[in-house]
Length: 143
Image (cartoon, rainbow, N blue to C red; front, top):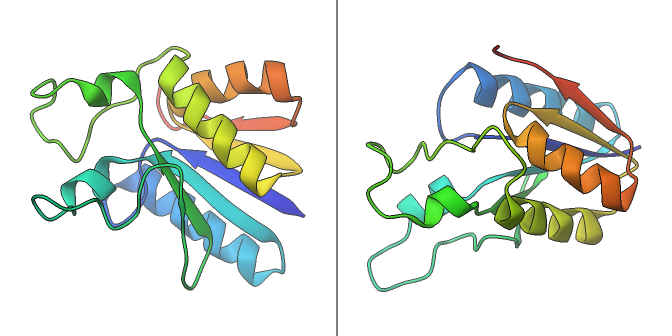
């Protein structure tokens, strides 16, 4: 099965949501599923050398062992100084048109049979589901 996991954040950022999404993606891949992850571009921007592009451009899959990773931006991430820690630019609790557009590119590229959303990215995943029709499951990690 082709599974696209959507998560607000993903390793190398550390946290419970990030670790859960990574463990799930890797275990599903070990069981023979074709797995990809769509997440925010926070790490890609932070890892960029001044004057150079991030090592994994938003919207482009990262190759290597494990699931493919699509890092996408969102509207709030474009506002410099909006967050005290630039690695954790929180996704808004609503459908973000910039995020929906980036997630659509990941869906169009990967063509999942199901989407599994984790965190506030679920609001954009739900909006995307309305237009692309991919069955979507949500796991709530906070309330």
